[in-house]
Length: 80
Ligand code: SF4
Ligand code: SF4
Image 1 (spheres, rainbow, N blue to C red):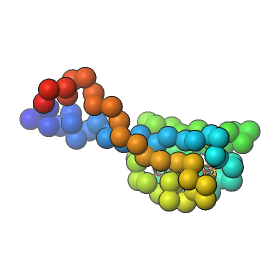
Image 2: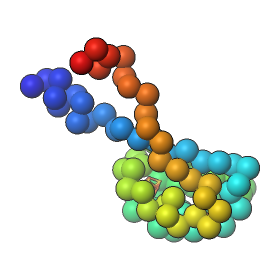
Image 3: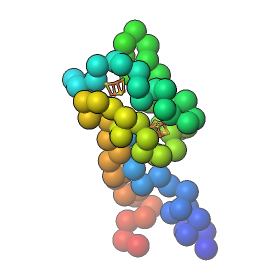
Image 4: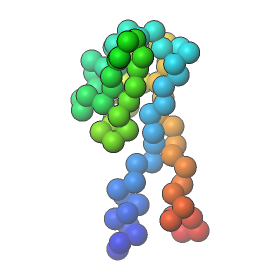
């Protein structure tokens, strides 16, 4: 039971930003429900603690600079 709860609480994806592609347009910031994206001096960052992996921002980006990618399997789940 404990392992099941831990597995469900672990995010399986993580948002990555391709800064070479990002135009700093702010479109992704505007659609993020928990306000997890920030533009400071035209540099985009994401708060991974508050990002809910809703997949809205990658769909909004005009240059495909955002993606949700699989997380590495946590060590405590190895062999399960
Ligand atoms: S995936 Fe959703 S919650 Fe996470 S940064 Fe993008 S819009 Fe915000
Ligand atoms: S929508 Fe795309 S180009 Fe615009 S700020 Fe976000 S990541 Fe950068």
